[in-house]
Image (tube, rainbow, N blue to C red; front, side, top):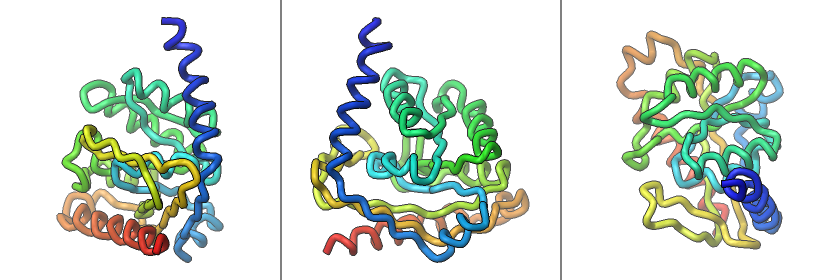
Length: 214
């Protein structure tokens, strides 16, 4: 119990830092994102499940907050993000989901940007769920479609999200699209195309990142 609670998080953290230190990461920011950051706009980086391991090293660069699971594995991710200077709000699909969303809203209002896997927490893969639109509305934050690609990766095929972990010395590209306007209550209720359009924009961001590998 003591090993899992106190020692394992540090072991995972040190291993992760050594592993990611070898990556060659390139950020492809859209002009709209550059302008939004200069303006101090609140931002939600919307990405697919499976890409988060490519994005986590950017927590420090973009001052990112995110929701993490209350599971034991979630504790390790939570520790890593906090060590990188980010912030977390904890919850799961079966316990504390609403509280975790409210906690993330508070963190955005305190000055953090958010990162959200929009096809979570349990899929289906690459199908946008409504949570990101509610977060935008509540926090007054703009959604930035985000995609990632890497030259070589370990793919966890047994996991539902097919997460990819770039191998040491990989090239990693993270592409950011133009920010959306803040989602209003009227849009959320009346526009049935929101999820489809965001899915398309995230897929395009992933394609731009993949193209940089060639």
